[in-house]
Amino acid sequence: MTGRVATEQEAQEGSFYEFARTRDPALRDELIAANLDLARQLARRFANRGEPQDDLVQVASLALVKAVDRFDPDRGVAFSSFAVTSIVGELKRHFRDRGWAVRAPRRIQELYLELGHHIEQLSQELGRAPNVVELAKASNSSVDAVLEALEAGRGYRTSSLDAPDRDDQTLAESLGSDDPQFIHVDDRSVLARALQGLSERDQFILRLRFVDGLTQSEIAARLKVSQMQISRLLAASLQSLREAFAEQGPSEE
Amino acid sequence: MIETFDDLARTEESESIELVFPARADLVVLARFTAATIAARAGFDVEEIEDLRLAVDELCVSFGPMDDRACIRMELGRSDDTVTIVASFDQVPSPAAGGAAKTLDAVSWEQAIELSERLLDSLTDAHGRETRAGRPTAWLRKRHAAADR
Image (cartoon, rainbow over all chains, first blue to last red; front, side, top):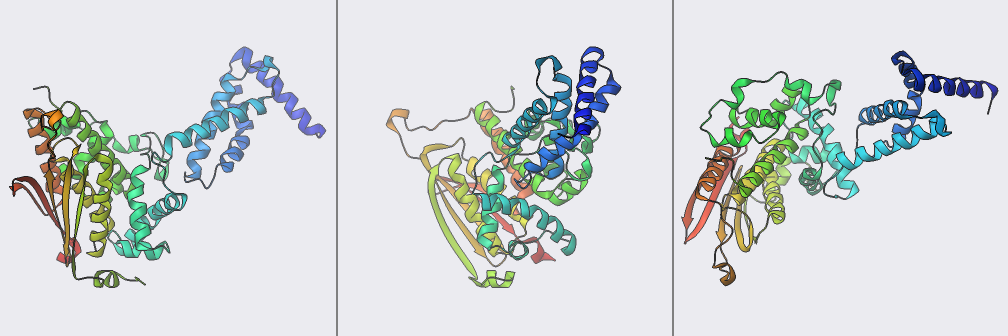
């Protein structure tokens, strides 16, 4: 250990003692900033596993913030050791929650994630959604593999409402304010009643698709997310509606 | 080697595939996958294929809650740029259950059907429900939209 590093660590240790005593927000920010590289390094170790790197950095950074808040310097453990355990735990939890609900072969998982990029790119180039042959060519895969991957995509968990998508904007932010007319479009409609059991986001997307008649791509563009994400959300919402009907029906009438 | 849509479509001008499977939710994937394969051969784009997958789910649930004592018989056909799917429900009588599958109450059933029909309106070009040879049957037809352009 060089003298400079040792001095920095000692200074940081002193800062943690001070933060534990004062809970000074400015000092908290300094401690977080001083350890952000550690969070980024750990996020990089989880790269290429099917989750966007920006998401991983965000998860690791939030875990770092929690670690700074919870760290107790009196326990005699270095902050870096405590933080590594906390951040890695949070990253693993993220994969557990966001990963594949139904285990698909790795090549299919990777192809599915790759297809998302090709669909977006080809849609822009062609001015329409691509067909399967075009996707197979772009991804250097067979038509069968593309079809298999698209079906397997149903096993990929839908993103959290607060998970950033494109442009770092969350889906929740892109929904904007409540649209009071949405639920009351037709109160007599069974669809309107069944929709009320879903989240605001899912209701909004279902309405855009089935009431307003927008295509998946048009909804994706409006909400600034990918068409594949809309596809997964629609499938999951309809599944929820079917389950609601199967269990008790949507109405108490 | 399939390199263009024409190559894919040329594999057969029209085709018909019949599937029979127990009415279990985890087996509907067979119907979705077959429908997607046929739709790809008809030149459907990925969005149309996704719509068809959702429509297949709706067809399968339009007979009521899944019950693996019964089976779903599905005929999937392609003619040029149009896919047609006809699904019928073969109830297998079960003495222990008095021959009846799990059922929804009448109000919930009507609502489920209304919802399914509303969704199928958006997802397909035409669809319907009827009784054929004494079996409840639901069908749909979806045409590749680019064929209209």
